[in-house]
Length: 254
Image 1 (cartoon, one colour):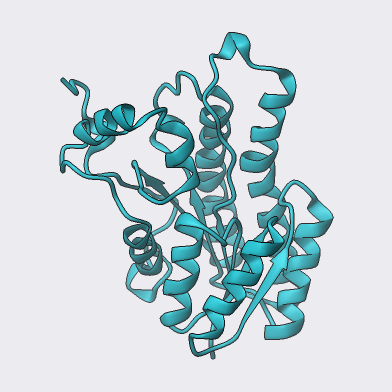
Image 2 (cartoon, one colour):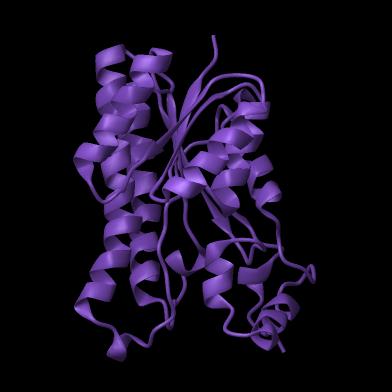
């Protein structure tokens, strides 16, 4: 029987790549996002691949919308076994210039959105008797390092990393679930990279700080996600894998 996965923020960048890769590998895929035009384009892209899928317009900040999306997936596929919490928001701003609304917006998407979707998923598990489900969260290395200039995202991602480990214990015992995380490094063709690279010169500086000398690709993140969700990684739980070319380890970039 095919497994079903919901991917938030799945219409562009890493989310889009993960949806395409997982559908090609036999998953039923539910893609959520806020942009109607991108959802339509994603629907057409997934139509060209064998298997079923859903695209749902949804804001992860709305708990009721998250539950409705999970229930729509359950109605179509019978159950939803897995979730990738990929939706994110970020911008560069010195913390002393940050507004309360700017802080709240990012934390609501990244941290509260991860909770909202995970909580909706487990309600489906309870009703459908799902055991051995999975959650994969997307974090960043500043979840355990300083995030100067991106304090809301850094604080929220740190919360997501701890939430990942907490659920790995709680829901591992209770539901046989595996909960893990990926920490991508600088990844090309993503909204985050576009926002955080202030100029072509800044982007080049970031590239030089990666020991492997290049940016990663969304497809490389998707390949890792597919492995972590596969039976080949069936004993992996509560872990965060950094896929960043060694970027976060480079303490002396010059």
